[in-house]
Image (cartoon, rainbow, N blue to C red; front, side):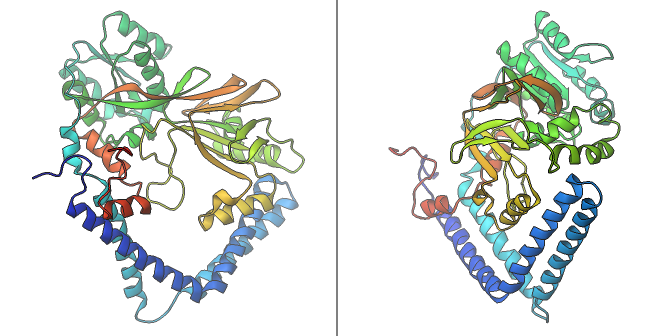
Length: 457
């Protein structure tokens, strides 16, 4: 007999207890390791600080200061290597100790996910009834995206075989106009086979007309598909959403009314990608511009915003605003989003302006204390504003380089995008959410409480 909703089963409580036990033993072993090698740990952190400060000079200064920076970076890296070698235990027990640490880590993570992922396949049983198959679905295809994935995987022929109208983006044609024309001809579902920028554009038109949208992962990196839990290696599986799709609602974000599905970058990256010739010579353009943009004689970036914890911030060289927060820190899914329906923007900014400040940020990050740096800004918000004195700012929106008028108003739109996804995607999304393992949640489950239940349930 299944446990009723919001009731914790004995299996889940056992998994939570096992995860907590593995975590405590692992923590004890790591503390003992740190105490025995405290001097080498301090040496390694000092080396990291020297390496980062040297690297900052190497990329932001010109000769002869650049040469000094390179020497400092090399010396810092050598210090780290020496500290790691000297702190590594020797003898026959090394492999056994390493295996024990890995086993404990695996037990803590694996059992924790089992405790938090409440009967994943039962999650699909609670989903809304599958939507009726679209009568006139249209798939727009970018034949050049992802090195020609549309042709490589035969996406156009497969879609036509499913009764989907295919529209190819040819040279000189406008993607927005093609999408709007498809709707004018009676399309009741839009899909896009391409990269994240084109996905965002077509999705915005689908939202405008309250139509479902299908994401076909035919781009180069497909970050949006990755965070949705859609197969990026074989985009043909995405097409099943047209035939047997399940509706899933996720958040989308806007900046100045323009939709984005991943993130918006301001500052150093957005400025570099605006430069003529960047696409043809990325490394050379970046090396040339960094000293001009980050050097000690350079004016700070004309960007201002309000950090809810630290107040007004002026001159950050990097600001990234994302549709739901990215995972940061030492984890296997770093730089990914575990969910796309949290109803919040993720904001990360760095305001370091010297090598010493950069060294502080990275050194604290190495020990998991980046939030303690006054030059690191990380928070979530439903609305966020970036200002500039000039009245304009460069922005990279889902990889597309633009210049926008300021102030820039960012907003999250909770569950405003209707997706059609292949069967099983809701389970994949639940698995991603279960990666967010909290010791507090595990303690609640071990005590028989549902950490996700409403307070009065």
